[in-house]
Length: 340
Image (cartoon, rainbow, N blue to C red; front, side, top):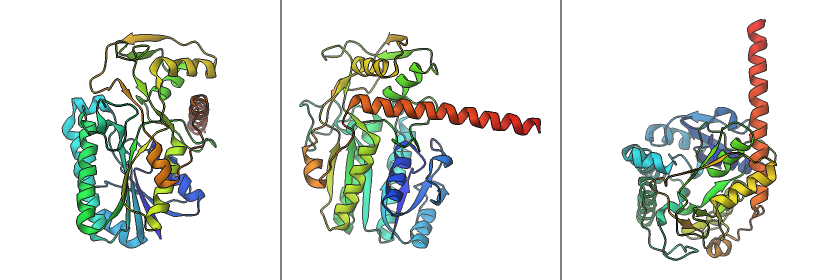
């Protein structure tokens, strides 16, 4: 049987595809390539360019490939952008997901794994935040994901679709073999931005808000290595195949780092003392959010391998250098072809 990965040409999705292929699974990718890259898809894996909300296309993929499970990553993810353009986020994240869920049910897909977010919690009262904490998003991005969670749970109760909802905390790092990583131009992920600054790709790094109610005044986040995150998806797929119940689970390590602490780690690992400037808060950013991770460890028997900030930074830095090497090789090849 085959697994459909929506958004499989993007940052997390491309790591997921490699992990599935490494495990001997059959995979098909659906991606509109708005933020993903065709080269990021593992060699030999079919890539269908299209929308996850296109029910005719999705039904065709399911039918022709014998799709057993869907792992749904396709989404818009930048919180400030969602504040500026909420309707685009509700369309891409919620409307398209509703269409995909309906298509999965009609076509007899057995398992559905949904990429959700810690943004559904908003500014949680208790830290670390548990899965049963109140869901009170403070951004359209968080609301768009929570709406999809609700639709998935209700549709699954009515139609028997087994599912796992994984609420991501802050995803960072890259494939240890440098096969893929965060490659989007203008990305807003802190560690990505920091390593780009360390390598001279950005003139400076901005710290958005230094007056939060945290020890050093900057936001605190639970950073999870992307490879541990996709490992949680593989564990979720295994449990669903074994007849396990549907579940909603946090994906984080259970401890956090402030923005200043992350910047210090990047400076230490890279050996570069790059420029940092203070800037006003961004809308939609909670002060502190850290996962309670006991439930995912118990339910999925999840055992992370990269729970170390320096390792996460090292892998992100190695991938950024790999991107520089690839771009230089591409430019050299293009220049040579123009001279020929």
